Image (cartoon, rainbow, N blue to C red; front, side):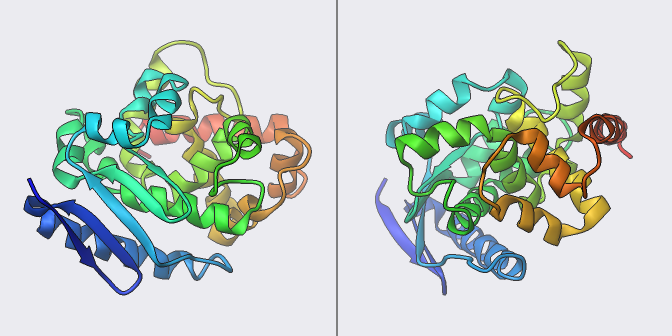
Length: 251
């Protein structure tokens, strides 16, 4: 199948010829995301290329770090790691492959369809926080691993994926140990966004942008206490767990 290129005002897409219609919809999704995120952040980069891969194998071959990221994540969240990002390119499964990756659970298809926006949100976060990629370096790769709940969670929230993940969140709460707060590296791909969903409910979306734009000094406790106006971590922990239960229950 021949590879072709499509373009919009701010982005280009490389894809197989049979994905031309889907590529146009992905480009429209990214244009709308850039406009919205540009209202929250001082920098919302354009001139990026999104590469749409027809299969998970092709995506992993092009972006081998993705296999490592998935291996470090708990099984319920691996399904939603459907791409990788860099300074100039976003690599993601084509919409038909995203649809095939979805589970039978309500919201899975919708959450995966927003993968290009979540990856673009990661680019925006990195453009506004020099402590986070892109570009990837050994130092900030270690940092993004340590702060996965923040980097992945904010991108997930900003993409609008959190409401679609309620069934998966409910499953996670039924299985295994209670999650830590903030979510561990393994839980970040599924639960990270819930931290920012709570922050936005209490303080508004600009608070999310402020939090992820600040230098990553200190530890998670200090970052969270600062974001929630000095509230002790144990109290935010309890509020977050109640928020998880509401999300899992569909509330």
